[in-house]
Image 1 (cartoon, rainbow, N blue to C red):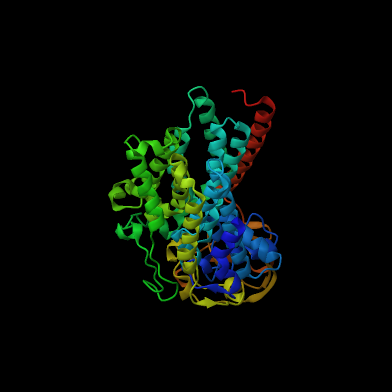
Image 2 (cartoon, rainbow, N blue to C red):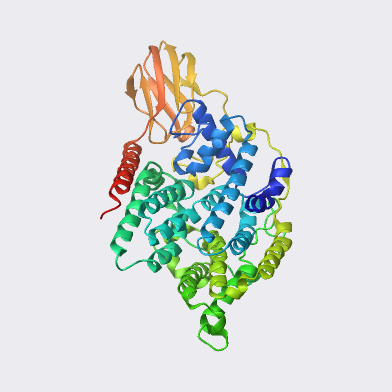
Length: 544
């Protein structure tokens, strides 16, 4: 039933060829293809994308790691880029659906958990992510959301070793899938964690949670540190972050049942972001039950032991809902919070919190566990929501569209500050040329992040490698480093260098910078310490 629910939600992708036109789907597909090209050249980890934005960019520096690597592996195994994308979306949705159910079963019976999972599966924002936004990283991030909550649940039930592993794995998974979701998921999660602290074991719980999260972030250093520290080289770093009013939801968007085929864009279907009437009704019903739980004759229908959990899930939902609304705009001026970009991203956590709140509501009011009520509600959700899970303007693109692009699909803001618009440069079919002096050039090898040339000239020459310069690129003449020039207005941002007369072997190599080397060491250290801690805690029963 769970797999069937997930497959129904993604069925339109599976039965139609190609992919629907979305805002970001083609970007993620291109990124996967670029990673596949690098891996095919024997490069790991992937650090450069030579066929992206005309003359290459350090796309892997800011690309979502897990979607890119997993998609690249599928492509290398023979899948088309579009198929690889569809497979990742499908398995992410199936996995998240199953994991949602696994968590809900910690609190409720099968039918309640199935109904809650159905509500989560056909959450409006999920349809938007699949068929309008093409938000593969956000879709994949929901795989780790229930695992984070499961880790805290195990911590509350003194299953410390399991909690340690689950929290480490889920935090690392979120960091490498969509780092922004760390903040969005962990804001409400902090309330869930605090609500389950036991006075006798609070220190142990805090130490385990802090250790797991800290080591996971350390293990993700190879990606997170360069992402933050080398972002200064891009135009994006000079743009002051600000949250615009359009990023917040209006009150109408909290309950609207209207769907749009076209709304703001001729390509993808209507980009109308909303919460949903079912979901808002669950929230309002929970508030009513909580406020009337001590009032006659309502209180006889309410199970008092279930109220603490209901309060916790209401608090998490309130926090996330408020962050969707303009009343919290001031909070988005705080460091880190201002990086969220769009407050409506909190819908990604609410697709789990509100179905979870439904579970807690049924536990607080056992009468709601009536089988007829639950089956009717699930049927109603399917009847009204399934027709809205479809794509618009399906197209089949050739692999060449993903293998090379003249544009920076992540926007011009992600261009290095010393370059211009990559689309305004002429496209070249050769990797290098002699631009000053005379001589002969033979390209021995031309890989994604390294090339080797043979030069024979009677005079000094000036060479160009049609590659956008970025820290890490080095040029060697017969093994000796030479200076790179990349600020010549005639060849803006491109690698140029001078070579003395004679026969020479030239090597142009993209190597890790000090920041990336340090980041790799820190990642290895994080994995090592976690492995060591995991072994010790298993043997010593976590005697802190």
